[in-house]
Image (tube, rainbow over the protein chains, first blue to last red):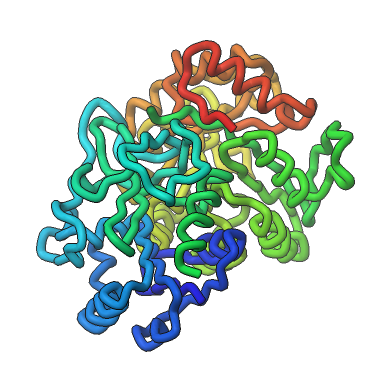
Length: 197
Length: 248
């Protein structure tokens, strides 16, 4: 069973549907106790970083305990930003700190938010990327992003380079929406799910 | 590099696609779910389902239509037409919509934009603007609302809209090309993506609205309906012209 953490940040229907298509048996959980029998955990999320307030102390300790036990975890969009130290969008809030650095606001001679299909460039080898063509496009919708650095396995360019896919041990994250990214997105999800099951 | 998006629009009435298609490969060309899946396979970047039902029964059919279409689609799905309240929007999100498009209801009650954005995020709210000579017209009535498209787009953005769907009423159905001047005006007025609509007839029109018009995406209905390879042929043309396009 793959647990999808529902902390009130947006609509989870697409994530549920795509995980099912990727071979998983997803279940939306609204309480940390729902994680107890999870083979994998997905932290989705859209919108303002302030929404991660919903990931309170009880969620934090439960999620951390599962990570320490080796349960695969996947953060999507806002969910991956929460795996960093925090975000400039809500400086008072702390992320989980699995990855170093903070999410920053995209700048440059481009429109922000960054909305639409953009290409990902692999920068490290990982089984997560198996079957995904170099230069494949995936669907983004966000204004903040995490810096490329340790743990970054693919980057994307929009005004500047940022981390598109990250991985450290059993913790992974995607800044885009694999559930909305067509065949490339389903391949990425299937790769992650096959590790969890 | 961020790709220019091609979006197929399906006008749906009482659960059926209004303008049929010539796709011989489809068992039922009037089934929105089958047509949406066909477009996905062809390489379309997004699908918009626009409900043009005039009756309450027709509106009720919409949620089932969306559920059916969404079950087979792993690209963004937008639903518009007749969304008046947050509850209307909630029912469509629950059915599987990723984004909601609001038009007349937002003109009557601009706070609706903010309310939907607060609950589902700005990325889930598209404000559709129908413009004639730069002036905003209500979808149902042909009345001039007294607003300028550029100013209304900016207000919608400030109120929390994530994208603008800009339709030129003057060009709609003419196949004479998009209104590139209006599109550029609106695109420069906001930081959010602008989807150009109305007037698509040939590949050069798309190139024109993406370059001169500075559109982030282009939406069409009939030009995609008429041939089996319209989307892939168009993508090849645009990529060959040097635009960033998603390859499938």
